[in-house]
Length: 112
Length: 113
Image 1 (cartoon, rainbow over the protein chains, first blue to last red):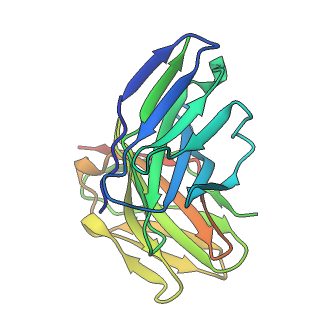
Image 2: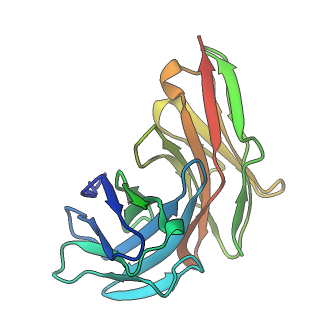
């Protein structure tokens, strides 16, 4: 299936700082998703993004979160400012025309 | 709202034994159901998916699942488990009403030699 890259695999930042998580879908898709997985727990939907707009977001998608695809390639999740409870693995996913979602390997965010 | 329940947090089976991982769901609209596998330090990989049609769906690596509307279930099965199947398995649902995928809490499969 389509490849999804997430670089870096791990980010460590101090509480209160801004962080941007990058997702590179490699091939062109219109639907993007971010999911959050706290260690050992289920994956939880944060937001989906279609054609430049946020379509749905969960209650986990706090005001400090924002998403964009500024240059038509990378899809980003920005958290500003970060909080301790933002420590988790964040997975990016793309969706194809048959509703299948393909996940990246995740970025582990550690907020100190 | 859509929801998924995986009642077994952990399942242990011997290599070569058969396997069933349970999943119960609720949804609005037409359900689309998925099983994903997550190996350590990796993202999710799709095992199989159900769209309205044949209730038994075949997936990769010998996995299959059966959709039951009457039981609101979508259990995952495998006839003979291999040690490489040791992973966490997530059941998920979306529907024709939304693109959002809702995941269960996962079942950790442990395979004994």
